[in-house]
Length: 339
Ligand code: PMP
Image 1: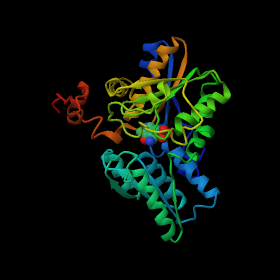
Image 2: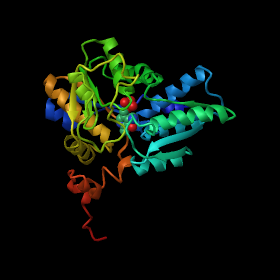
Image 3: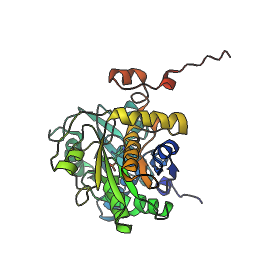
Image 4: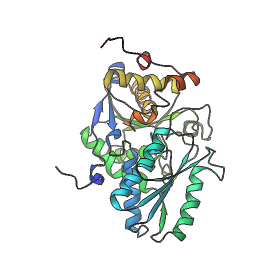
């Protein structure tokens, strides 16, 4: 089969059995390998659906500009798909995000604007800055500009309703008992959740919330309340985005980094899976859901992005130590072989 361009190479990612997580729980725990998308993350799907939606609505013309506020992955997806389809990208990113993602965005030709990381309520929050910038550029750019607005643009969730969810259903031949993931925009969580519930209402949908996010508290007590913090990037929501509206998990877990990071390190050391931090929250969440449901169930989660994107943080002993986080022995191993 020949793809006519990278757009056709987005999606249809493999479902990989996670051996240790499965053995530990007596369940079949499967990871949807979203890091195998052309932009190395789950956000390629959202980027493509947002662009196609804007094209269909006549909002985006060739040579037009796509503006977005992003932790990085959506920006990389937009930049790559934009390059392939003839659009420019302007990306607003909080300066705290991993250097590797910023480098990749520049490499993709995106115009990168770094802003201080401030809460959503602050008018200088990266999402709000990107919205205002899009409005300004829409008036001044000869071919117009759009705001991708991934948090509240439900074309994002639609991408998962139409692709990720049905793929998981087909790959498991409908034998999926549970699905769990973390929320950034909520596109993956609500989109896959809706697609699976539509096919079988008894599939248990779980939320894996990192520390510093407010959704665990919201879905268990009704109050949006955050506690603690996490070094994971791209997840950890403090509000009900439009992508989350009308959908709620059956069960929610709060996963500290101390639980998620050893999972990430183990997956690399023993299973050859090099993943970013949000995948650790997801797989740790899948283990919790497996324990909740009991042995014999099939649980799917999302392997969101590739680990090399976080070499300077997640896989950097000095960084981990500075946050009092565990450092795996192999990360510091030096060769003792004399060549
Ligand atoms: N993991 C990573 C690394 C991400 O960048 C994102 C997107 N921000 C997510 C998970 C969450 O995906 P979603 O936006 O669909 O909730």
